[in-house]
Length: 125
Image (cartoon, rainbow, N blue to C red; front, side):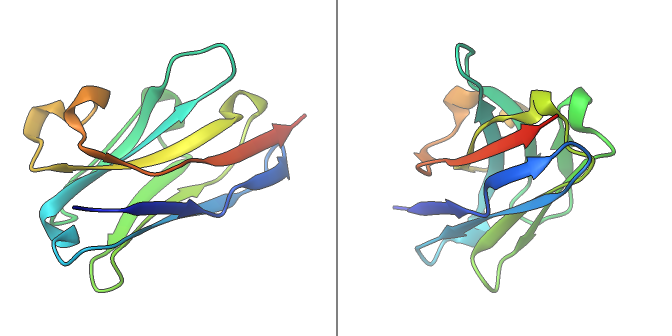
């Protein structure tokens, strides 16, 4: 079992930055690939970024490449999403998720076994 708790959301002006954190419980965190997803009002939840269990590989939605960075600290059981140059269209509830060695399915919501409760990010224009 892995329990996930996100933090770091808030209200920021366009062009600003936020860093989301996702703290995981359980001794096997380092074995899990971690993903970030988001859901805006009226929209389906979508993939944002992911990092493999080792931290060696990262993946991003095209619209956030160059602006967002996903990282992890396995010694702290925490994964991060650094978000820079934020845009109003980044406004959403952001969720972290954990899945065991997902391989090519990292961007698929259904691949993940555990989810956090979400944290709201609001970007004003």
